[in-house]
Length: 328
Image (cartoon, rainbow, N blue to C red; front, side):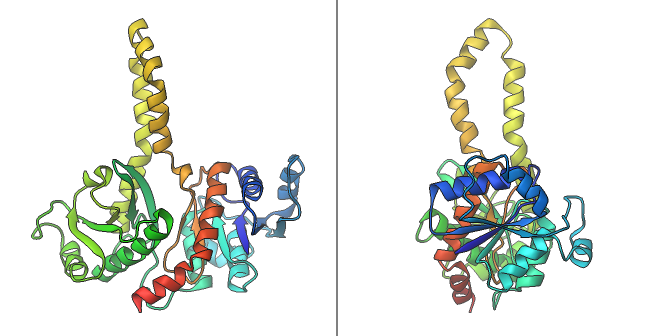
């Protein structure tokens, strides 16, 4: 099994990508890593590492880099020799079994869809994100792949999300909720009302409408919404922990509150860990005819390592075959 990584993608590339690859190969066996990117910069980074395993980590040169500011359409036309483009081509050619990038999300989705194509039956690929809840974690899907959806898109997101959640969390029949502004069926938009009628008779463990507050309450394992709403929720959630930390530091300024702050510090460390997206690594672009994992731009080595393990699991569990069977 070979897993390709975009060595130039992310805020801390190539260092975090190389370090994460080293961590993964030290912890687990049975796979090889292919680092795709500017060979001189990758080698320069590797030269600083004392624990580099040259037997399981290889390099494939890709001269150009897609920046975070590049538009996906422009990158698709003009950067066909970029690390994202080259690793997707390797995947299509069967030279690697999965690709991972912490770089430009739009470009990752565009190149994977253009190069690998869609699984038969999939209208639009989707991407989800995990969020902690009172009862484990909630998968929000879609979080930006499809901003304007049709009812059929939301139905397929629910199907693909259920398969993915089961594989990752081990829950046999995960519950699904459709995000709306109330639990009553007459509420919502035309989109949610029509999607509701597709989901109600399905074989999914569908619980009906859920509201925004139900995400953290963990009312359902999966919350389905269009990409515009999902991305807004995700970006807001990413600001919560920094906001809480800053407000706590501002308010703990007297001797008495400082003592109290010291006493509750372990609890806040655990809260920070629960809200840490690095614990889950990247998430697959569900619906493409391959395994394409997309991670956060600020991913550290731990997140890169976990993304590699997610990719390996999706390969072993035959994720795409199960999606194709479910949508056939």
